[in-house]
Image (cartoon, rainbow, N blue to C red; front, side, top):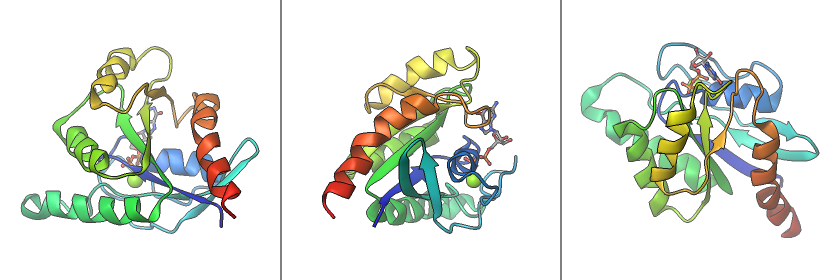
Length: 170
Ligand code: GDP
Ligand code: MG
């Protein structure tokens, strides 16, 4: 079985764009409306010579404030439990929001490898958000632009040990 990698984060940070970038097809639904990812089939991802299974998540499923946190938690828990490692995506342009901190707390409590991705960092536009991301406590964030395909070499370096470790256990 290939390594399973889950993409986690609040709505609109670019999770589905990253999913599509790694799968190479428009499988996930990308939209400006938060939480539009309805199709959560795993995708066959490739990055250089790495092959792995990638799982997109919505961050939330409906705009119901009362159950929002509960639903985010449930979906995140399910994806984390199933994954060998997590790509935790934040929006470098927006900086760290309370919702990002919520996901960070959930991930901290898990025993999974967390790779922090500061997305929307094309050019130098996400620089301040990139530095803020250090405060989440997952080490050095990877500056990426899922939309423009920037930062993929750094993502490769971070994912390689995870994918190798899973394959060694076969
Ligand atoms: P999700 O809700 O986390 O799955 O986010 P989406 O992938 O649906 O993207 C939300 C919005 O951010 C869309 O308008 C994307 O085009 C945009 N987006 C995604 N990645 C990038 C990026 O690297 N740079 C910029 N500027 N916009 C991006
Ligand atoms: Mg999405």
